[in-house]
Image (cartoon, rainbow, N blue to C red; front, top):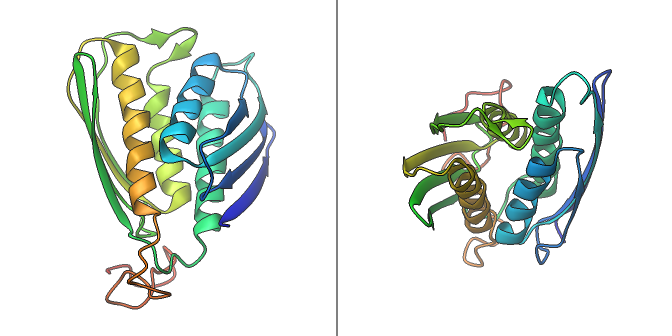
Length: 205
């Protein structure tokens, strides 16, 4: 079972995140931010990653630090659970319709973090959460997970639907990309023979 736990403690947040990549989508999250909890439940359910998160942050200031650091912790846990990434499919993509909304997400578990975020929303808040923070969560997750992530909302009107379709798209893309391909065995899905650590080697693969 590909499992990992990350504990992240700063002057702004204290977070513990546990993932089981080969789970059934069981989710137990408490971040103190209701809408973020709802999105993480979507991520867990549709990726089939078992996810447990406990986060305490400086919510009396705003939701930025808790949102960003939760993305970092979950991304680090996913990366740790993937280990050297041998045998995985590596790539995944999804088109997610949600009523009037359609969002496309494509992902590469390349260990080369990058985010393209082509998402615009009309409302500045969902509940008490600033909608600009969703890009911050995706950026933090992509960086920490070592993932290239492209998110594009093709069309939509309802802000809730747009944001939720982004998380569901990430979930389905992860589910595909982290899947084990039995034909690969223990091979790394790269012509280089390894998915390199960013910043330590030339990172074209």
